[in-house]
Image 1 (cartoon, chains in turn cyan, brown):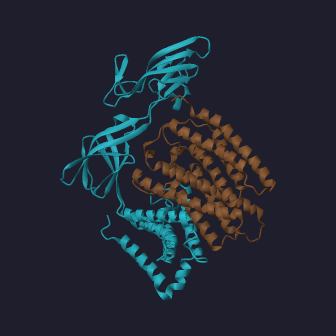
Image 2: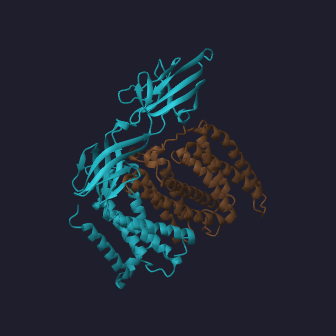
Image 3: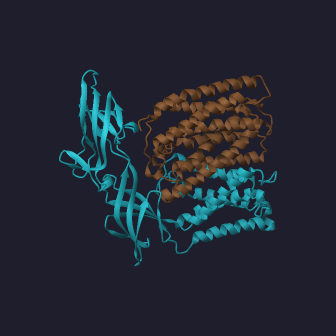
Length: 362
Length: 274
């Protein structure tokens, strides 16, 4: 954490420089030159050309890597951003007080983009990001993060599993399973020359003797009872088979149904939703229960907590949940810029790009 | 849920292509005879083909129980449905009916690519994509891409008609359409970029991570910025600005498809588009 906010001083210094260049009478000529179209084009191409490197070559955070593998941490990139902010900032200050709404578009677009880029640049050093690995039932406190978190439960919901088919003898997949072979109760699946009736489906099942029963804990694998009717591969002899197909679960092997030389089995299913049920406590305050889900972060004490990952080898049984804790004090600055630029775009949509610009000046 | 989306696509494909082909033939006849009248029947045919495609996208949405916007093939469908409307609108607004040939042929090309590359349509949507931002982000981008594609095509047509060293006439229908379309497309492109940032913040904790897709989206944005500044400076009279319009569209295509083939794609979070 920055004790001395250098970045804030630098940002203020840049703004002061922009205002000076713009409004001190002796500096009008260089100011005009720096804020003109040729400079805007040069600055954009300069920054863009460096961007091309980072768009083509994989980037790394490793400071010992060659410069083209870490473009955004190089000196030349810093120079290009400062140059961009200088010319864009002066351009924004060209018409700081639009006389009417119709003429405000130019300022909204230029100032909005300037605020975004400046907020990103000067705020970068203040962003704090930490991975928090939670284990069920264990209270975790990390330095800098001002609260203690306990994982109460990790929940994972899955999409319906798919029926897949492979050759019993060679082990080769004949059909890897797709949208049409999703296991849903009451559905009839057409596969090969067969009709496969899906009778019972348990999203979470456990084994009981030779049968499967619903497992209310939600931690079991998916299982379905299927009936296969049709002809075998030669198209001559009749074929009928039935039985349970199931994913593996706690203490249970995966199970398939043999139909002639083929085996019907259940694919692994993809996660539909995963979330952590947590309890957090700020200092010695009361405990608060909450949920954290992908796309639904939790905000507390200036920090945002994001669901990042879990132990994917354990799937539903994972008792580990990984969160990202992020603190970005400059976020309001960047968001302000984003909304100003969006307003500028709305303005351009309504009035057109030329409405706010005098002919011959940019 | 037994209906197979792919089979329906194979059935819908032909009437859509048929309506477009008939519309273009009629439009060509109309334009070659230089009639002053608006090519109403041709427009109706082109629009009906496009509406059929739009209806198919709606059907697909219902069948998949998720917005059909995840894979590159699905985004191509959206593009094919949106770009012909840009051509029709420009034809009616600036009487620049030639644009329909470019937009409809582009749409047909994209549809044809989908026809040749059957996708296994899948209902799954990874948790990161389950967000209220998903639809606005993709739709706004697709509208932007369609408008910017139409813009490049309009400029291309008018540049071909202009003598090599002559000053361009910014009042000519094609150039006017190209500029206006670029402007509209840029608005949507910018909105898509900003929505993407707002979404990334709620999904991954940061609005900007220099992911290769993000980087190329920014480069596309920059490239169009350069076009607007050059166009503004030259009052739309020089070829240079339009060269940048072409460059911008190439950068846009790199961002949309090309990224997957670049070394940087290894570290992209947009890989689900596969």
